[in-house]
Amino acid sequence: MTSGLPPGLEGNLVEYVQGGVADWLPFDHKRFYTNAFIIQGDKILLGLKKRGFGINKYNGFGGKVEPGETLTGAAMRELKEEAGIDAPLEHAGSLLFVTNGVGWAFQIEIFSARSYSGRPTESDEMRPKWFSFESPATSDADAILPPIPYEMMWDGDDHWLPLLVQGRKFVGRIDSVTQDDGKFAMTRHWFGTVISDD
Ligand SMILES: COc1nc(N)nc2c1ncn2[C@H]1C[C@H](O)[C@@H](COP(=O)(O)OP(=O)(O)OP(=O)(O)O)O1
Image (cartoon, rainbow, N blue to C red; front, side):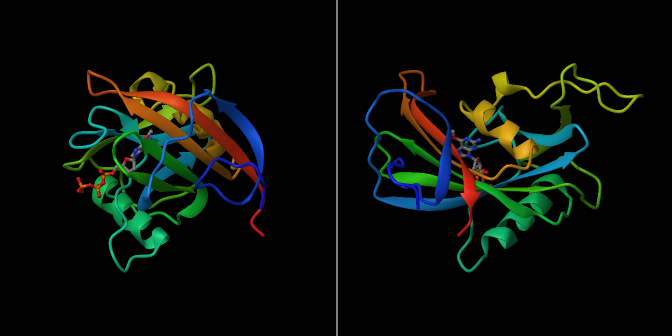
C-alpha cells in the first residue's frame, strides 16, 4: 500500500494528478455505485442522464449496487437497464466522491468493455450517444463523431477518462462543496494509477 494517500483510498498507487488545498472532507461510510463505459476504436459510448442525480450530464451507465449483488453483476445489470446492451465488463478503476454535509461518500467502481452485444437503446434514465476521444474528432471514415463533452460531464471526469480509454487502472478521490445554486464546486482532488493489484 502507498503511504500518504488521501483518506479512503488504498492500493499500490503512483500519483498521476492532484489539485486543491482544502482539507479533505469527512465521511463516515461509503455507498457503492457502478459506472460502465463501452470503448471501441477511438469512440466511447456515454449516456445523457434524463432524470435524478446528475440530470442533463453525460456519464457512463450505472447506479447503486443492490444488496447481494457483486460489483460486476451490478454493473452489467445497470448497463442492460440503462442502455439495453450486454458487455463483458472488466474493472477499470475506483473513484471516491465526497461532498460536504452528507456524511457518506460515493464509492464508484468503474468498468469498461471493448465489445458489446445488442443495440444501444434509450431508456427512461439514459440516452446513449457515441463520442470520439481522438482529436480531431473523426472516427469511421463515413461518420464524424463529436468530441467527449466534458463541459456536460461531472467535474474531474477530464482527469480520469483519458486513463480509462488508455486502459490504465486508476484510483481517485474528488471532494466538492455544494454552492448556493445547488451545483458542486470541486475543492480538492487526487488521482493515481495502479502499479499492481497486490
Ligand atoms: C463527481 O461526482 C460524480 N462523477 C461521476 N463521473 N459520476 C458520478 C458522480 N456522482 C455519482 N456518479 C455516478 C454514479 C452512478 O453511476 C450514477 C448515479 O446513479 P443513480 O443515482 O442514477 O443510481 P440508480 O441506482 O440508477 O438510481 P435510480 O434509483 O434512479 O434507479 O452517477
